[in-house]
Length: 198
Image 1 (cartoon, rainbow, N blue to C red):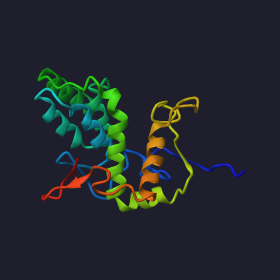
Image 2 (cartoon, rainbow, N blue to C red):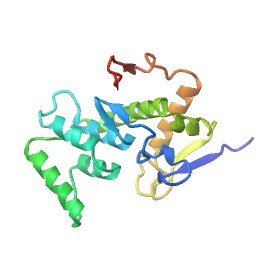
Image 3 (spheres, rainbow, N blue to C red):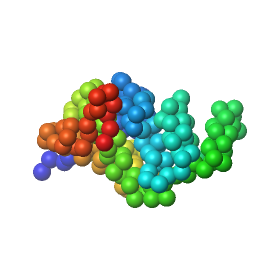
Image 4 (tube, one colour):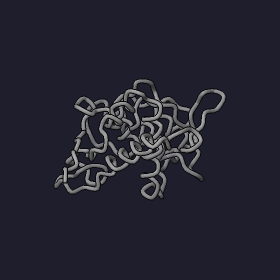
């Protein structure tokens, strides 16, 4: 029996970098009415978009979605920044200012983060044809986020992590290959202004 091939990915600048959430999209991704440069931006902003969220969350979600880099978006969404460099101090000031206004992460975030990531990835690989082409070129290979830092989304330090990002990428690949990732079927629609949303 032939062993299933494994494709490892991690950094956006390396082979299969299109699978990284830090990879800059060919065209910005319209998400909740905001143009996001990466899926990291789109994913992280969702931590502050939920039913009954504080009014202050709208401005904070927009700040995350429009952050200069995906790493900055991730830091802002985590509401922690302990570095001492100038850019880190500036991020810390923004975090504290918005926290003081009441911006707060969804208390049920862990329960819905997989669904949010799946939705973000579906939009990415449906709208970005370059990324979609690379994803489909992998056939039925096992996709593994080779991150030693994250045992949930990636392989983790011991290589036995959950690899949830890889799992969701393979799920999206299967959906596209089967023709199931279509507007209307996946729940993605386009309004008259051309902004994609659910």
